[in-house]
Image 1 (spheres, one colour):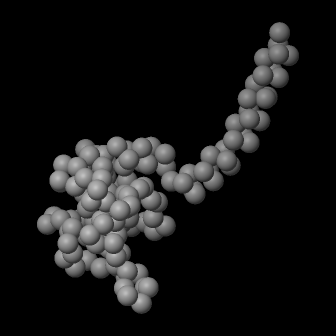
Image 2: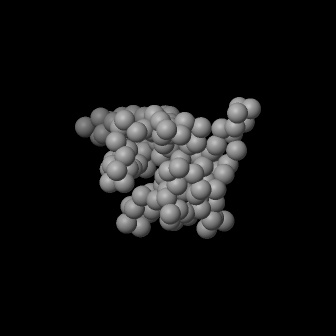
Length: 138
């Protein structure tokens, strides 16, 4: 009986040790699944509340930025490209406290030369109250 328990514990430890690197690389490549889940649920509802429909949006999905962002927000962003403004990519974030959706002031604008620039200027779908994603970081 003791041998079975020992072997079971040993197998469990080996499985955990082998699974940790796979989990680490999954999160590294795909982002935090919890943040992804929250963004996929909250941001489309937020946009719907702002009056946007699926017909207004060309592309939208969760992304994981490669740089540190505002500590008040979960690390993952939700990017949205509107059909009537296909050269501008908008980013939305979710606050850690209260899980509120906010638009980030920084947007990616594709120039006619094919270069993407970060802009904070007023664009067609800019919200009056946006948050700077690069504030409040270490």
